[in-house]
Length: 212
Image 1 (tube, rainbow, N blue to C red):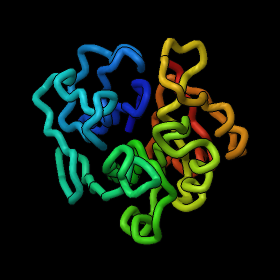
Image 2 (cartoon, rainbow, N blue to C red):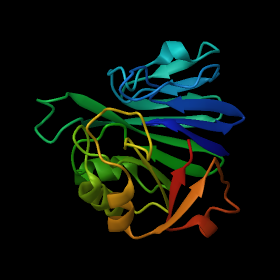
Image 3 (cartoon, helix red, strand yellow):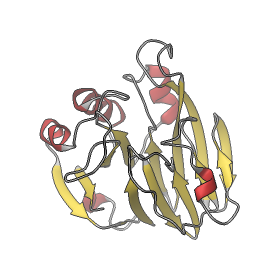
Image 4 (tube, one colour):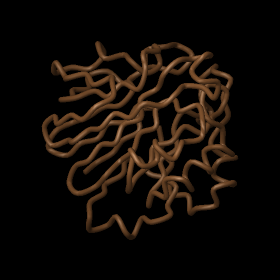
């Protein structure tokens, strides 16, 4: 399996089939890569920095709701959460996705805006890789993100939804540095993450930062 960060909350996950999460189309974030093809696109919520499905080639299936789905090599589960900590009153609903392939289970938290409930933790279940927002303002911040990491206990963490260093992003969100410090895991910088059951244990307690 190969995982690439495309910026913001967008990732490309390749394992025979290709899945893309939360593609964006908003100048405040940056320019979404062109020419990408996918079999499935998982959309956590219908904001323009997360739902740019028309930018993906290949007539992919869009999954943007709760439930259980199988597309290509991926088994996907959508779990209901909220975009804020006021019952959805500020920003509405958010769908957390678990994505399983090649014996590896990924959790993409979308724009999670609160600490998880025990019921949500149970629905998510054991995971290997956690894609977690850390920038605050519109999502959980660095302090809350560390709490969620401890709730879910993944082997590997992939921070997202933060302002990269030297970025032109104009959204009022933090960089990743405070999260890195508070989490205290080994930080590993990569262009892409190649992972399978054979090397998963060697990446335990690694905080993966992608180059853009």
